[in-house]
Image (cartoon, rainbow, N blue to C red; front, side, top):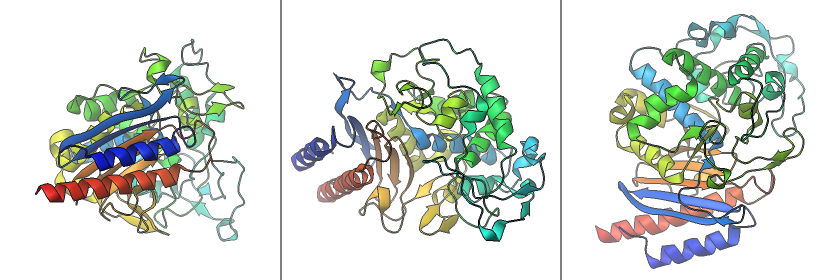
Amino acid sequence: MTVNNSLHTALETLMAENIGRVFPTCVLAVIKRGELVLNSAWGTVEGQPATTGTLFDLASVTKLFTVTAFLSYVSAGVVGLDDPLITVVPEFGALSPRTVDGGQDPHSKVRLLTPEYFIGMRIDPARVTFRHLLTHTSGLPAWRDVYNMAGPAPTPPDQHEPLPRADRWANGIQAIYAYPFVGIPGEKVVYSDIGLILLGEAVSRLGNNTLDNVIRQRVTAPLNLTTPRFNPVREGNLSRQQIAPTEDDPLWRKRRVWGEVHDENACGLGGVAGHAGLFATALDVATFGQAWLNDPQMAFGITPEVAHEAKHQQAETDGARRGLGFALKAYGGAAAGDLFSLNTYGHTGFTGTSLWIDPDNRLVVACLTNSVYPGRGKPGTLEFRRAVHDLLASELNHSYNKEI
């Protein structure tokens, strides 16, 4: 199958409407029925044309790589989905019981009031299981300013960093072990970066190695993926021109974020974390998605039973549907648009990235942008995501049906 003229024209029009307004850079990699039908770049990287080799800060799409590594250990019988987190990370249970508070807003960073219902409540952290982390039902806060506990703002990625990554991680994770809960484990979905940071720590311990090395060994190397990496400039020896820049950070880092992870907590922890930090090309992200669609057991050693749970609803609150680590398409479509099937699974990233896998239509779309470049909170990202996915689903599904 090839991209027809109508799809090509419509994509060019859609990109022209969004380049320079919503984001400066976009790369799309699309796989239909196992065939790469599109791998194209639009826009610029600080004045130079973007290419299909441009790396993007994946933000929360990183979570899927962390989850994949963890589920490979579940499938190997090393750990169980319903095992308490403290069986692998006992320090999480050292402060017990823990209080409940209102948490902290991830955007304004303001501490929130404790709901009256939770005042005086205490929770035993031993109740938190790995399934809770994977479904975002742990009762842990969505976000806390871990980076302020991990150390000072790091130097630019092309300069020497005096505070070792291991020290940053040790400082930050120690703070996480003491944070209050914001809800009762198992009660409802509250999307939590804190929970995935802890899952990343568990993956590191299960693999007896650093998280970046475990992900390389168990997720990217088996697929022969060469671009996914943490700290692409500081530790990867890449030039910034190969990487899409993200947001200007005048308050903490006091520079435009370029070649280092946008997420403050991941950056403060040393650039490697379970919730964010990976950079990659769109093609490698799509290839990862196709491996989940084809045969996760062959690719990652994840059994069909575990893979089925990962890709199907395990928890739902107010329309937020969760598998194991995977976000599932919302009933109203949301970021995946209206034309992907309800069985679609994947994830979005705050920087403007996404991976959606539609098993019913055998369609995988990695859409990577840097829509935080003009500043977080600027409008247009959701609307673009919906438009591009609806366009691809409409044109490719129609074209394929005509061919068969």
